[in-house]
Length: 510
Ligand code: HEM
Image 1 (tube, helix red, strand yellow):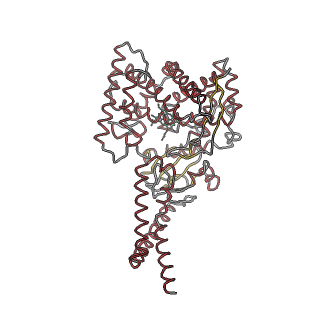
Image 2 (cartoon, helix red, strand yellow):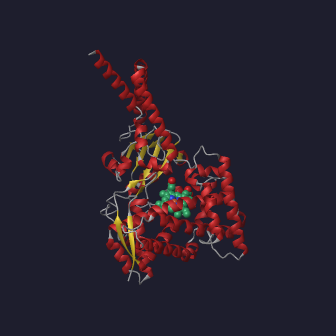
Image 3 (tube, helix red, strand yellow):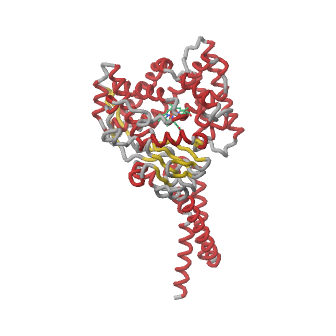
């Protein structure tokens, strides 16, 4: 009897100790974490394995030590739960919602925030998610008007979050993180450089790259890949070529393009962390920016054949030609532009696969370029509304009075843009993919805001439309599209995306 009780006691203590780091177990099992943070994921798996072995060894060989550890852990757990409870219910009125450390819901349910808003109202709290997991809650705001009010009222107390390590490598940082003195200067500079004139000058180059990518996708699907091709690698290659050309004037296929690739890969923006060696990263960045300046100067000397954003900025303001802040920003735009526009194009292809009637309508418009462009534009706007416009993240740097609530210092804030686009008062039948809703109505900024709200609104909105509409026009002119494989959407590190198995087949139109 004594032996049985003793074993049961050890099992309970060991079970408790093993279950205690459950947020870490959850994180280790979370697929996007395993994919994207491979070194961190390996370290975490190693730690958990070592910890588990230690607990099992103590249960077998040193039961007295196991008991002491379990009692200590119990006190720590009670303290932590108390601290979280106290922290998550601060304020004049406790924010509604459920706070969990590393919640699963946002990763498993594509419409998690929308459902939470239906349950708790438009302002609620939840746990924080990747890429900024924290022991503090996140305040979620569904509704662009409330989001804009918060940004306006507390402009000086909202920190852009999460920080971007790359932004620390050049003098004034990336536009999104710039201080309030520098931001208007550079924002104006980039916004005016992305003029409609400049963009129409880039359309031939964009069309050439889109045509090239589509023909490779069609050829590969034809030559042996019976279940079609995964589009993302083709889109990534196409977008890198487009951005290199549009931002720096580097022609795809040229010697300069071949030299650009390894220099850019060496900087390796996605792998930079706040702990990376700043010196080495700055050296890599320095090599890349020197190369870009040399190429741009050579192009100027050859009478400026390739119009690029860099040459456009230099034309308006010659002293800014080799400003490291401008170059750093352009390099960051290359990285984030490829990711964002690539994500958007994946969703567009998925919607066209799911709703072939829109692909047919697009093809019907090919005889009239104006109508084709207009329909392509509506398809892009509708996909942005439903998918690629997810959220704005901030951190409160002091307690913030907001309506009935106080948002405590240190809490994260998520303005849920995509979920704000599900308001049935504004969008009839909001879950439906209906590009024609953009024909009759022009939506105001607080109704439709895929490119953000207030001070940090996107400067690449027009370029995004130019690239995606040109791609759609090239697709409709020459190809029929069929989705051959699919599954439910999946959460990647930052965004929801179509299933990684999503495949399609392009066939040449007769
Ligand atoms: C699908 C395409 C895109 C979407 C949905 C998108 C969305 C956004 C959003 C929501 C913001 C505001 C972020 C915030 O307030 O925290 C933003 C900012 C920004 N975006 Fe985009 N973006 C896209 C493409 C691009 C492209 C192609 C570029 C550049 C070539 C670009 C450059 C920027 C810059 C520089 C900012 C910061 C602006 C500032 O702080 O003043 N974006 N974007």
